[in-house]
Image (tube, one colour):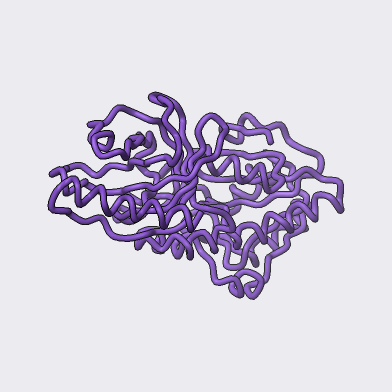
Length: 307
């Protein structure tokens, strides 16, 4: 998949099969659109192009959404779009100035002059342009004028799945990993880097890798204990992960840390990927470290059964 930082980097195609949107999560609903895009590309021998906007428009246009947390980092989204067969990904930097682009200018300058769109695939109720003035009817009217066809994915094909990025965010916020994973069609993932911590886990036989997540906008699931798969140096392990403040040792800041089962190598400063499978329980304060150790032994047994 080729990636372009702005429409200016893109070289116009003769037969572009195009869709656009934020695609946060690249979930099952999005995958319906992407599948149709691939099918149209194969049938017409065209090249698939996806236009996405970064940062997420809600972060720019709505003061209440300034701190919106996203399901995917941009790098994660790139990976999932490539897996879904997208050949060209155009990343348009979304600003308040860009938000003033009229639907007519978006069609002419970006879809037609910039990309060479011959077929456009959109989800139902798709809006675009200044004040979301552009819609399916608007595209149908402009298609003959500019030489492209438009196909709208019917409402029932997406609604029957009952999926949206908002629903997935709410599931993760509540710790409902299983619902989030069902809607995503894969395990929810966090990517980070292992950093030094307080090394208190070693004292009770449960050393943990503390995870630094560079992207502040990346959604972290609810505080609690989770069964996860852990990818280190292209190897997959079982893990028990804590998101929380570690009240038993009077912790203050919220951390993400994982105990990797049957693993004792040093991995400081190494990249790490966490696949969330199930939430085990709430984080809670224990009387002492021995009581915490006893609970962690029970947690480990449950994690082994789940994974």
